[in-house]
Length: 304
Image 1 (tube, rainbow, N blue to C red):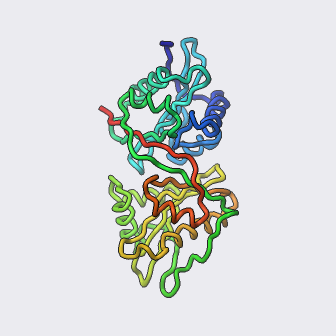
Image 2 (image 1 turned 60 degrees about the vertical axis):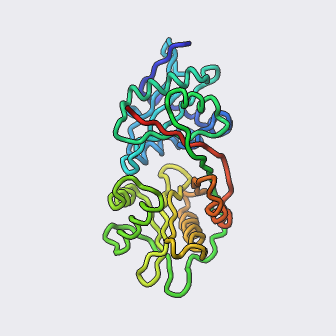
């Protein structure tokens, strides 16, 4: 088995990182579900979103002579209390289960992450990385489906629900609906951390919150962001109160997000991820103009 090592990435490594990212997007057998980046600039934007420095979170996989043959790393999100696995993305003949397994072991030994959950999203066709993850103790979980919508092609429709029901933005923790929004998101999306603190952190990170209310009562909400330095946004969370479901409020919130994204000239496309088994949610997003993309599988690792 060829020996490999890891070292922090430097500026001169970015062209290779970009090529590896591009290939992971275009070749399904080498794909990762998140972070799914078209080039090095998008990966740098993802790192910046979480406040991660390149030299501390992105590493080059090197052969015995010290030449870079791949990259890996972790996106560390204090807000989500989770670390997202990057790759490993490997070049040419180095893309083997053995090399990927070695890279994963070296990464975990280097990072010594014990306080956060470790997760990776791998495209279903990437059997090499899937086997390497399972070989190194990662557990295979639920399937996720990426969906996307071009803002120019989106059918936004009417974003006003009618009567006293309307959609507006929530931008501060002083908003009277802030506690209800935080509790709803935390309950529906199984947030493990304090929902009030987590939503506050999201707002500090530049996330936008749309709330649908009626006479001061919360009906639903959406949490989304424009990833700075890219041409896309992400709709990360959508929630509708149980008593108001089945009335198209989820569609209204989704169309509102698309309308807001369209008004931001920098955004050309909005992405989201949905549980593959959640046909109701998939139908809502399709009705708003989203198309289904790659399927990936969630892997988790319990640090010792």
